[in-house]
Image 1 (tube, rainbow, N blue to C red):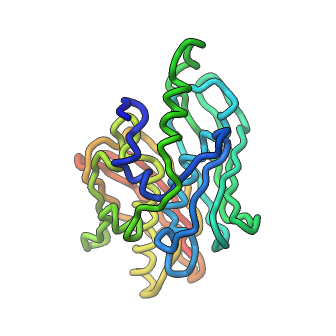
Image 2 (cartoon, rainbow, N blue to C red):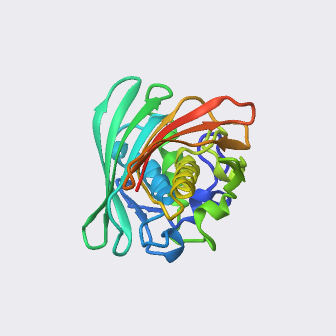
Length: 262
């Protein structure tokens, strides 16, 4: 499948995680695979970000499809899961230009593992009834086979690296884009998590784990490699607040994030 708006997941990081969609498109599922977890048993924050990013469409499954992008995402990682995960999405508000979506992630036992609130921006009005946009969207979701194809943790697959002097970097490429060639919003959370938790780990001299993040997509992230120099604003020994600005190769601020690291 080749499409200007929907990437071919067979050659994309989205197709490597094992995501799958319910028949009615209302929920996204993630399999129980060790490579998707951190050492402490929690779902990797970046993997969770991708799941929640993709889960937004579940709230709009019963409505006429309009192309959209994320304006911001807030993610809270609550507990380590037991078994596979699935999303439940609700539309809190839908206007002509923007909407607000709320998502919960439950594990196989029914426990609430993560929660998210997201603002989305519509790129135009719903298509005419004879448009094939909804069909294209369905064909895109049908490509997800539910099998995890990662052989290494997501941050390693993406090549996220500590460049020293408090800066992290990540390359751009066709395997991590959205439909407009910008950095995929869910993939961006992996980068933000690695940098923020890495900065706190260096600051403390011990392990650190991202608990929550508020991510704002300011402009299309088109030109990599991307870099971030996290700023630890406060650390009381239990939770640190980290400002995590993502810059493109030209030094333009493309994403701003506030991260809580435990």
